[in-house]
Length: 420
Image (cartoon, rainbow, N blue to C red; front, side):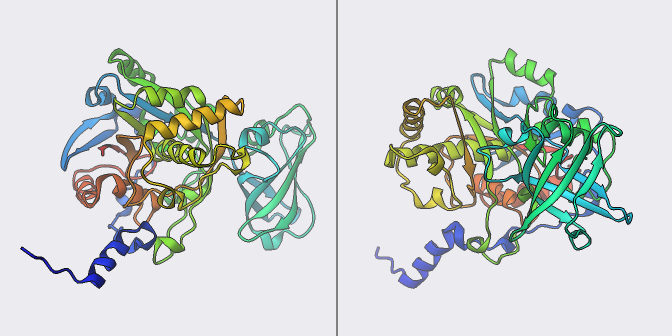
């Protein structure tokens, strides 16, 4: 039988499949405020866990997650630590200037280096009440009169200020200064003030590397008891670091994704973990959180770049927004990761520290992960696009099911295990 296809219609359908042409308005659902979890459960691991596999939805709890994952699997967590990035300075007039620390100046190679600076550091910041802040330095006392933190505007850039912080106690690192002077920046959709318990509950039990302004929230549900149950089933775990920026809360306002600039974030991965991933490619690899997923999928594309240009320099080896759709698509995962390992060994690197701007959206094919553990995300968000890239149009069924069955949404809410 000869089937005639209108070429214009065919090309139009192909064009729609390009993630650049996705309309964010196709990823909207109604999220009532009462469905947003304003506080966590008293016991982290008693949060509900929706499980999706091959179109079928079942229910469980995080405390039983080991029973839902095959033995010999590898779980990858993000061990970033939320820093007290919100600083409030009071002027002599009594008005308050709020400084929100986004990420370090580009003069530092990575966030850890910037966090360990003594005496002074330059940071990219949002400033609330900027019009009230003229040229004078702002001062905040950390330890009575023993230590003074000062903030000085260096310059105004497109959508942030470059601020120089300096402090009088030279033994303190900037991470320690933030701990003393700052507040945990809760997600804006919680619409409440920070409380004392948030310092503990808005942090994973395995948080280690200072640098995030938001928690990798899928990991908030994990406890030492869960880790024991995973170990007892011979389910391996390992850690990457992706420092979550404020861009994770940035809504998509553009009509199509081509017009939306994805936020870039620092990642830090050891060569040992990359070798571990290579050894586990025939098993199940599950990313705990969208940040872990973006990190390990970025590793594949870093390997693709290296396989194409083995002499590439470290500072050039980054992942930009559309790289994973424009780079060669036919390179085997193992070959790409081995190329990255060989490049790291050639450059005497034990860890790869770089930036990724990867956007995972419908049309993307997972290269490393077989599954994702994640919370329920906001409408019209890049995180929802990421979920749809894994489960396709079934994301609507999943979210409708969660809404109808009393699941709690967003950072402090329940979660899901999504099999690709």
